[in-house]
Length: 115
Image 1 (cartoon, rainbow, N blue to C red):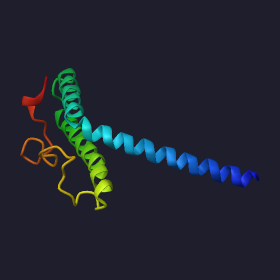
Image 2: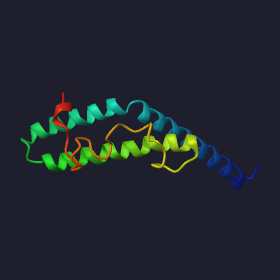
Image 3: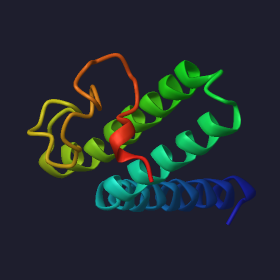
Image 4: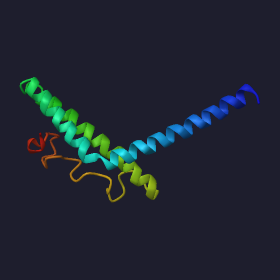
């Protein structure tokens, strides 16, 4: 077996491993969405308190973007399972109101969820 063949085999195995790891990460993200949201909100509340609200808007934006990215990542699992494009399915892997967490669409945190 030549060096090129060994490299090709290694590359194929690495790609397969990466695909399995990504699939597992999507499964976990979909399964634990609410827990992850709660932890993001808790961290945001902590940071907001430590900065005396000085960076509230930036924290809100960052948390909102993180949640939306997680939703898209988890939705890709459902899309991969059904063979449709991400975002075009029923959104069963998504949390309710992922686009606007508090209904305002401004990316602000819902302070009632802090703990």
